[in-house]
Image (cartoon, rainbow, N blue to C red; front, side):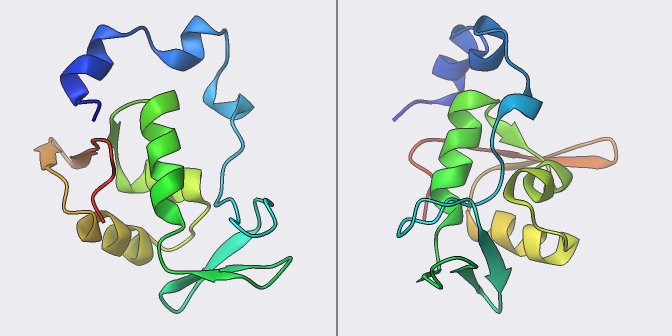
Length: 118
């Protein structure tokens, strides 16, 4: 398991490869057809291409976020990365993770670890 401390000792993965977050494919990758086409529908992720359902497809995406971008995430960053429009849904996904939450000023950050706790 890679801890936040171990992560901070490494150079940021994106910048070390001259990439930005805009270079990363966002959304949820379907485990069945490998398309980034899953949308959150009533507590599940549904692929718009092959109609595959998953309750936990976001865990792999959050592990990618941790490894490629940074070990902390805000509600807004989660919405952007997973392509979720509802702040309520993203808040539910974050609290479901059972990861440490840190309030700083008006922002709340969630500290990710690997593996993402289910």
